[in-house]
Length: 594
Image 1 (cartoon, rainbow, N blue to C red):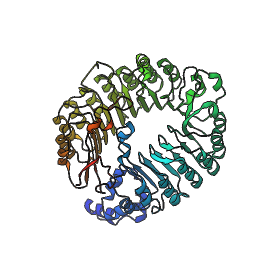
Image 2 (image 1 turned 180 degrees about the vertical axis):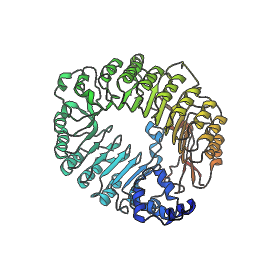
Image 3 (image 1 turned 90 degrees about the horizontal axis):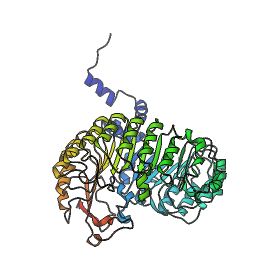
Image 4 (image 1 turned 90 degrees about the vertical axis):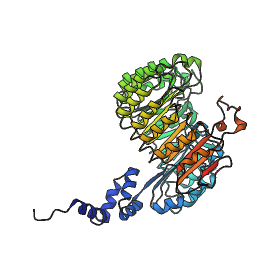
């Protein structure tokens, strides 16, 4: 109607290269949050690449040795938020020695001052010193709003005192599971005196000791505080804090130091808006009624550190119909999970951790295919399942695949306590789960020998097209199974393997079959003394680090009765623009680049 219709190719070029105003493109890029979408858009043309550089506000560096700080600064000079991951996940389970690396110093020193817009820093599994914190505070103290040190080590409360004294705009201080040298609780007093905008404070699962009076002062001065997760402190000492924290919605870390003395805790009243509750260390049946008055409004409940029996779990969870997140130990048993399936129809996340090696608890609890099936049928909004189980069947995995269509993260560990497992291998169940749960992005399966054949391993590769992270243990029967698995993993970016039967040559060939793979960690395979077979995977920008088994440690055991971490060879290979890392410990062999 009055004009020539442009050809599709010509229209596409006009939009990409010059037809859209700069301001409009900046606005459009602001709505693109997914990093992979951003990455794809930045490759369209130089103009889009530049706009992405200037408009990117948050970056997560999945591995601290994948890129140099200077390159990140040049690529994204206006970052407001930076998340940085260090040691491999295996460090959380004692499988990585403390001197492995992942030091925060070069990142803090090179980025803290030049990134003028930086407001949020998140370091995970890294070594952070007091000096690192001091450099960060001097550069960003007035602007810093979020500081997360997640499972980090190497610093003391002196660093925390500097943060709480200087960073008066801080809204989030996160220290969960950090190893911190405690030199006193003055840091919390400084926070209470100097900060009036704090929203989240988390020093859960640390050994920090604090004064309840400082917590009460914090609640008075920070009316915006909605989340507190703290180290263990007797609940009777927190009565004043809980009465003052009218806005508090999440609380974890309280302890019942005198088990069975319910009268001591009768005056404990939780804030009216509280809907996330955890910790409750040593809570038993006698103390459980403290939760009943507001159990119907709870959305998150963590019972991992309580002393509740299977029956206690049934009674308490039966009063919590609005739960969205539930974290327990496997003492909950199949009966407890049946109550979950009948009661918690809104449940989205379920975590079942391994309990203490207590024969009495094992007799009354233990999770099997019966409990998982009940949860799958009853809780159809589940998005996350992580469970330690004593027994599992193909049918249970098929049920999860049939009913849990929203599942994006599934993790299963089959314990080795039970002599016989009902239904192995789990090939067909795994296939059904992966075929039906098309939203899965993270998948972990740690079985026992014979738990998954080569056929099942090939199924995982074939039906895991959208999965980006995977952990597999005791799976497969031969090198051929690994190769068939790798040929199907087109989008897998991170892979961890443990206790597997594969050779070095097969591992190397498998890596070459996975085009999106950026990171692989392996422990327990058919290793050579020098790791020379791994060089088959060598290519530009690909680092290969080999930790040979230590002959001196073969017969040594750790305190929990498990073999020492260095009795089995380990391999870490990863994509890196930074080349060979300079802080590699002497016991670690860098195979490539030489």
